[in-house]
Amino acid sequence: MFKLFTWWNGISPGGWFDIKRRSVHVGTDDYGNRYFEDRKVSVEGRKRRYVIYDGLAEPSKVPPEWHGWLHYTFDEAPTNAPLKRQDWETDHTPNMTGTMFAYRPKGTLREGGERREADADYEAWDPNA
Image 1 (tube, rainbow, N blue to C red):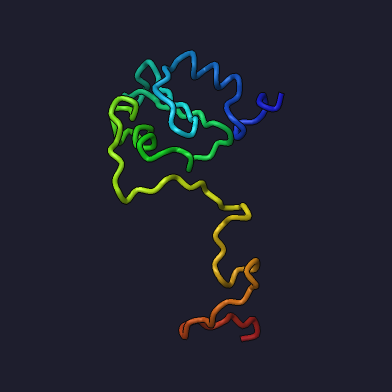
Image 2 (cartoon, rainbow, N blue to C red):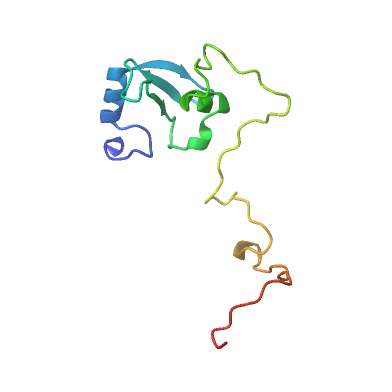
């Protein structure tokens, strides 16, 4: 019942029906996200491309090769023409913003609230001046 009314927790039954009706499954990535492409050319002159996330709709879970395919950087899907992984590339790390694992530099309230001295060109606003 929950899936009927939420789009952030996966695709709704209506959306799933629509994509399955007019699109073809192109591939699945290592995170379980599924990728689709329309059968017909759209008004823009190209086939629309979709991703159905596995779990929460978190765009940072889309790997670079699939991101390039979704945004028409690559014509061929990574299932047909996989990208060569470079030596300097690292594995995916999820977006931790809003979680207890988020990056918090010195000076933030959670880290004690102490911040460094302001630079010389900074002058605090005085409402009485």
